[in-house]
Image 1 (cartoon, rainbow, N blue to C red):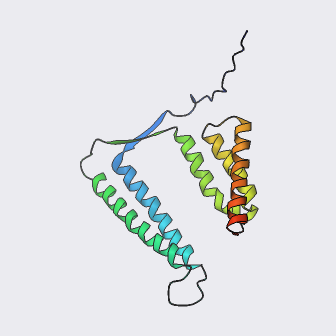
Image 2 (image 1 turned 45 degrees about the vertical axis):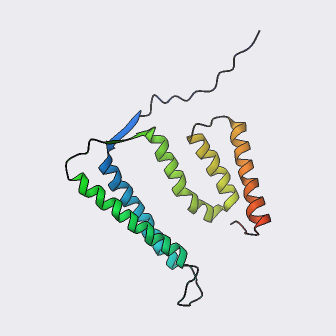
Image 3 (image 1 turned 60 degrees about the vertical axis):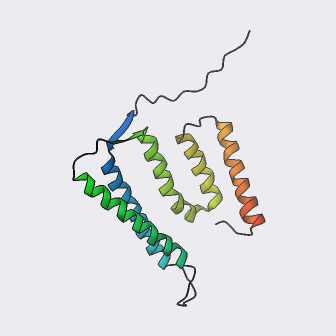
Length: 167
């Protein structure tokens, strides 16, 4: 006599099924968000000490990335706005499980400040476990194995092999 083990199911009936909006609005929103990130990278890049010289220093790379990201974001934002106020293209962007997407974005935004205050290992452990839970990985032993494996990987590669201390 075999026993049947059912996977735990997640009740998604309370969550809106899909979130759909015009492609042009999606382009404008993505462009605005990327532009905000580019400005943030540019400002934070100014805080990096590059020795006081006028040549290429430690701040050059993040500021260069910020500049390229800002240019791409402006193009995406402008294109989205131009087409948003023109005739609709008829194309929709659909996001399945929008609450899960928002929760994942919130976790991503909280990671850096939490790491600054708590350190890398505790923050990454909680962050990765929470992100796996949001992504519907509901088996505690699997979550524990993934988190432990990633933290071990981080320790071996960054601290032992590359000699880069993690905060």
